[in-house]
Amino acid sequence: MPLDATPPQRDSWFAPLSIDLIVKVLKTSFFHPFIAWIVPLCFRAQNMFWDAPPMLVSIAWATLISLSWIAATINERVAFGLPREVDLSEEVIVITGGASGLGLLIAEVYGMRGATVAVLDVAEMENGEARGVTYYKCDVTDKDQIARVAAEIERDLGTPTVLINNAAIVIGKPLLDLTFPEIERSLSTNLLSHFYTLKTFLPALARNERGGTIVTVSSVIGTVGAAQLTDYAAAKAGISALHRSLAAELRQSHPKIRTVLVTPGQLSTPLFYGVQTPNRFIAPVVEPVDVAKEIIAAIDHGKNAAIGMPLYARWIDWYHVLPVALQAIARRLAQVDRAMDTFVGRKGLKRESSKEGPLIEDL
Image (tube, rainbow, N blue to C red; front, side):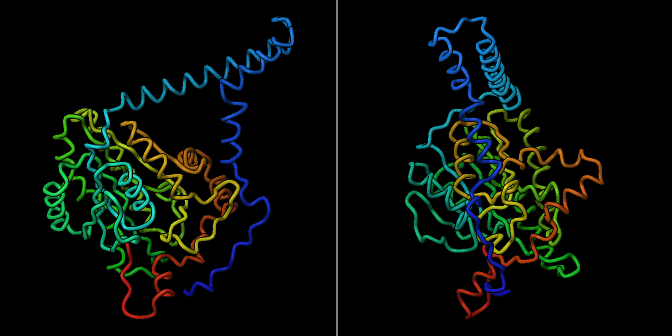
């Protein structure tokens, strides 16, 4: 599909407005303990008595907000435990699919901050070379190539301490149009490669006295599914289940290894180029830099985490709690099963930019 076949999305004046932006503003204002306690202090500065109704209401609100923040902190500590010690000068970070998009962004940030970064990809890095980043040409669907590159990384850079499984491809065809080789390639890249990299790099992470971190980049599509994404949805559901099961195993066998599950909505990367966002207010397109910030923060603090972006991604599991009739209505209203009708993807971009030679899709 040529690029000019993609219907342009006309931005209105309120296009930047989304439920995520509203919630972010509320969390830093009305729902923030500091701001909440400012109100009764201002009342007191006006010589209002402590038993005055406005004073009592404002104190009750500030107390409720403070208790909610304390409960959230306790909930996170109980669920994820204590963080591990992180020293970027001693971290060796391995990123699959790091030659472009989200993976490249994380690699460049850590490279500039003094960490040692190894990027694994079948495609050359978009920016050529980046400071602190070493590129290794590797097909993560090939167990032998992964083993060879892992040995090279340990020899050249040191023992890996962080593994970010980010490699992915999107074919974007209905099941009846998918060929068996396409199905195998999709599942190998999006699912089996996680088993291969984990089996290869996990022993090195387990040897580190300070522990390590495993980051799995999944998708909300693995929870809700979508038309023309049967292979992708199956793989993403698989790696989410893999991650949760592995996290349970590591809590018992290697408690110093931290796990981070990332479940984003539609990312603004070439992987889903051309996909029309059904509802920008409820489901805004996520910028890679925002997801990268959350992943980097989790790794830096050495903690377990479950990252969902945008807001609806954090609550997407409740979708299956709804009655099936409401699920069907929600799908029709969201038009999630029509979003891929205008899909172009990375291959379409390449076809427009270069008319010569066969196309090899990046991870």
